[in-house]
Length: 330
Image (cartoon, rainbow, N blue to C red; front, top):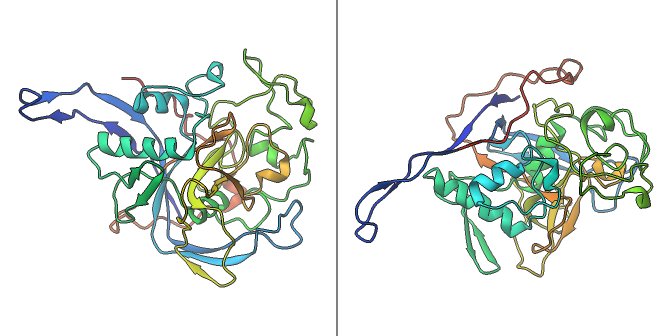
């Protein structure tokens, strides 16, 4: 049910014209290599069953249908990618390197990244940001954040278990055999670079922990890396209760700066139970943190080729033959 598509997000030769500019000029070429995967339209059960270990009360199990295919980046946006687009790197864990996820970004920062990347590619920006008020043009062709439903659908990749590769046995910082294969969390996030943080207070063994380069763990069945672990990921939606009935293309975009926004996945510092695809975390949109990042999405055109049937999980959870995306260079 997917087709892996390596899309080079090219910031092409921009032509700047106008009398004030003194005619047309060619801007420098910048290439931001962002691998993307095409996720098909489909239906799934969002949330978690009552008996799932680590379940929270806001994970009401309900049917969701997504009527439109979409692209989602194969990894969280990296420090190198963010710097090339935005001209800065706000990350706390800079010593982790350009291939590590960008963090210390708030919800508004993520929207601005999407808009700027769209503009640099000659695409219509998806968001109209005026101060703390944000509007989303749902017909846009540019880059955006995934909705909460899109995020969970992509993270599960057809799985109905607590993790996309099976059950979860550990809820805290012990080593979980399934989670360890796909995610960096408090049970395995030890590092050896300067600027690491002591995670032992949370029950982890590591006194020097932090983020890791993306795409070092196994991908899910749709070739998406780090959907769980390393950093939590901002999505579009504001926090709110799930519907009690089946939903079609849900997105809860209401609210301003006083409403908390959802972020999904889990971070290098989180307990194993927080790494379930069903887990919902929420923060005020202006919050930044060394465990908060994002990945980008883009609505697929209606003419996108139908993807083949999903490969059985027993054959996809193998080390990827796709090289981890290196930080792009001008």
